[in-house]
Image 1 (cartoon, rainbow, N blue to C red):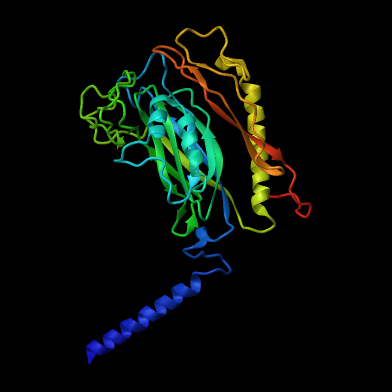
Image 2 (tube, rainbow, N blue to C red):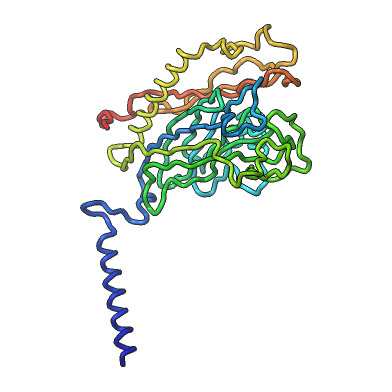
Length: 360
């Protein structure tokens, strides 16, 4: 009899608790969100990504590069996407585009491969190079309910095939968009080059290995630049922070308005960069073949093709141009510059006259 009463009492408590939860989880005053709030149609979220690097002689004294090339970081290349896309996978062989980026820092192969997967990608972003071992770089991007994951890569320079990055980091956690999150980053080995030190020659690994995290005891070799057997864990060589700037709901054509807003922000950034960075500083004129000041071993490329037509007649669109390699770089020569270039184009005006100007 006592057993039956106990079972009945527990059942009443369970039903009461379930009712309490169902009455608080829902859309109403105070705005407690459901477990599917990130996934609802029409939600668009604007994020900032900031990469802060900590590569210093104090933290990583072994083999710290003192001379040319000095320690620095490549441009960061990333994208937001759905759950079916993987930029790279730990314990799996690197794809050819990922291996090329990890070894050279060149993104042309990655761009070409990603162009074939536009159905799973949502937004693309690039962070400027960090010219020293310690520094910071940032950019912005969009995600939505169907494309809530972010992936990116940054090459460690100099290194054989080492990089930092994240694959498929989901910004939707427990049904809510993450407001702010900082993630420590550790060096990763692409498994395609057998060098053990920062300045090792690039000896191809045959057969190629898999992508592995570099630790204080891996690779297990005293010559490794990250081999510190006296410590259990290496300090993070970088951190990345994601910050939610604003969340939008699909009303008043918010997608078009946010695209226009981002177009304005990128236009300001491009204008600022063009003022701060003279075109001739890199040794390449914008529309010319490589000039005569280059050495015989330097990479040489063709002239740019004409710009492609803009993808949009109104609103935010893109156009592209390409160039090809006439001569690959030889040992000691300058590496090839980017082979493709994308510009935002179109009009800041809306496609219809009914919409009012977007306000924060």
